[in-house]
Length: 589
Image (cartoon, rainbow, N blue to C red; front, side, top):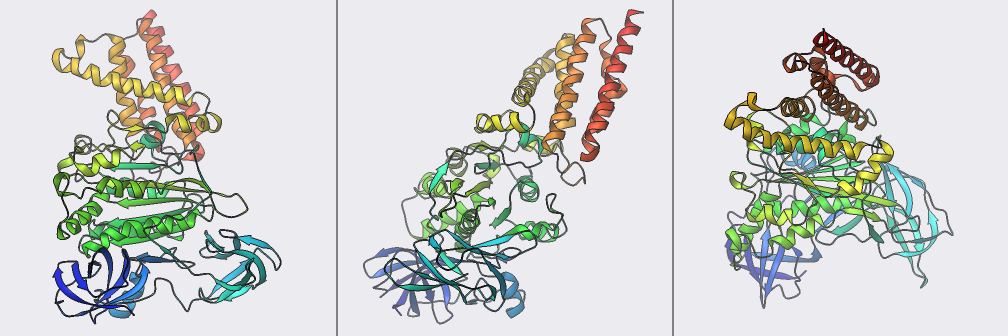
């Protein structure tokens, strides 16, 4: 084993010399305590090492052992329902072994070596296979069938394949290459976290990632295989929004990365997800979730690795042909870890002290999302959607992390402290947010929801923008100075905001809204606008129009269960039509 010696310790940065065979990003073991670290720089005889554990007590002269391999994750059955730290150490196993506090130098495999999994092959001897082909499957949880793929770079003919219960290290198949060499294949794979997993081709996303959150699905949709950012100040609801997306997004697998955030937020995930029922399967949401926890009190260096660990696991499930969503909360804390290490490496600082390569590192993360044709001969399509929270100091999105993120992502859900203060959640500002996937998913919405969906969305956006302009006039001269048509616009905009965009994530029914219910609810609000215009043109009293009992029914419509939507909404529509007709007839009298 390649061995060197510590010459300097500066927080999580250790300088060692004598590691002559070391390469960039190789994993090393620091001191006799075997602390895990990664080489960031090599200058002649000296190597700069980022240590992923507490370095208190280390000093010059202690040994450093090179491993010769890059920082990698273990991929195989056993990841779903598990919770790892930023370098994929299994926290539950560590707790069982050493107690509630992680002791330094704990070296445990990420995946159990003793648990056996029932493998069912899908190939037979004599079949020709290439890297990425599915050899068989393991039923990892009641909702996830874990596909066992031939490792990238291998190809040949299946000599034998076994059916039965195996550990992840036992051979399940034997492959003869074109050169005549035979190799055993096990369920366990390893992949370096800083290298994206390969695929045949990247395709343009066409379908939306359905989230059940009305503001997102209607106004600012994200495509399945797209990327999005949620910037916002403290207390504006970033974490709750990401929890909602993790719970309800139309994804087969969810990877949730708690990167530098408060520990109680990960506790909320751990407490809530097992109790919540997946609307598609009726099972616990944890049955399709992998959690990576690197909270603010854990080593800062491991925070930098946690994002890469999460995206690599997400790519692995994507390669099986699944739709995967990764939630990173938050990339600002990850960038702060980059800044700290850059400062200790004495690199030339960029804006606000962040390293000059900040934008490229953020781009490397988000560019690993996408809709791809996976490796293998079956032409399967996999989706990886990346959603990152950004926590700019004071909510100022002009700072470097926010700006670098906005140059990459195609969806911006800008959270507004003023909306959060008014208890409007999700506090996504409809005037500053945007989605560049509107046209991409518009065709899907026409085909699967309603032909007029894009037109309705544009009309809603126009009403909300008109409201902002009219409010400026109201502040100057008062609402009574407006025409009846403008006052109706304000009332419709208020209904859109309060009865549609406002959503209670803790309400049993309101927490998730299907596209069909979203469409019917919007049609109700716009029907009030259309009938209201006609009534005002006929001379109806505007105060009586706004006070109609049907307005209250529209306000409560979002709490109607999905199964009762059509019958209930048809009733509200008839109620509205009848009351406006009565109002018009009374005015005639």
